[in-house]
Amino acid sequence: MKDSRIYKSIIILFCFITLYDFYGCNITEAIFSNSNTVTISLADVSVTETYIRVQVSDPKTNDFVVLQRNGKNLCRLEAKKDLFFTDTSLTQNSTYNYKAMLIHGGTIIDLSNEISARTMVPTSHEILWKVYALGKAGCDDVNDVTIIDENNIWVAGSF
Image (cartoon, rainbow, N blue to C red):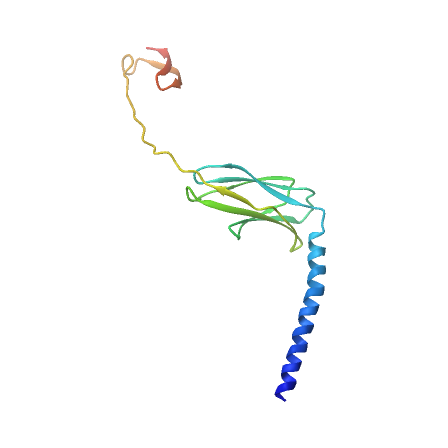
């Protein structure tokens, strides 16, 4: 009795592996054999934001792009030829990995390349201000200020 359960379990396991391998390969090929492709690229990076460009070669009605950051879904966008996405509220001096999936009718039809983005390190924000008084208070009019460098500042107006 015990031996027959072991044999039955082995046969069921063998059938499951064989069927999974047979159908799994066909399903994968069917899903990813679409000529419609999605690619992503990094447009720009700031201290707490990344700007990502998503391109879909031939978007169809009801196609969506799911953008992922570090393996977690970030947003779902209607598929268009050219999309730009801004990822905000990031941590400074950190690395993030992005990937996109093209989805049609609930089925993934293409995966994009994976890109990596590192946010920038901010400056010290230590600014030395000097105040210069020009003319009389309330009687003067400043029309324009041009700063060429730290020692070359031009002010136009009536003083």
